[in-house]
Length: 158
Image (tube, rainbow, N blue to C red; front, side, top):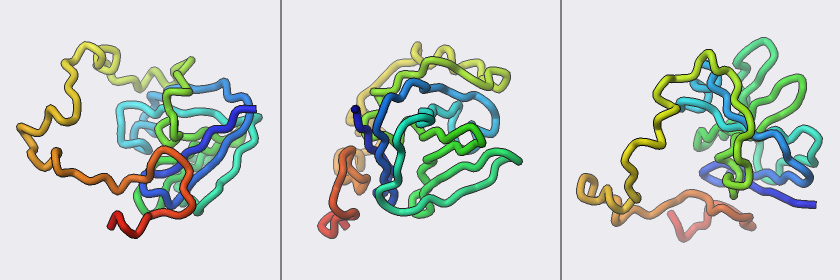
């Protein structure tokens, strides 16, 4: 059985999922755009899998009469879409989000037109931005690493 882990950006909340995960999607509806602060929400359904929170407790916001959105109260990372038919985890919250390529899009009535053309934009590596923002070369990330840790944050980081 395959096990996947993940959590929020600051590491206060962590989770583990074991089992077969099949449903990875992108939702373009306006509620998901707002909840993620993005053009769309990439979500991975954990319905039918063994899902558990391993560290911390998420906060929730009721975004409709049926749906709650879970997020980290410390760093604000979007974590869940919780509906009567199951829970979906924000794809980017997984330690390896590339393991879940989307297979379907929902809420296409809210899809922002230029999203289909994002791949056509010029691309640059992070360090190439140093000319415009020199601090990038000296940046030290306090983000939780993409793997399990005994405790977080590590004192030596702060």
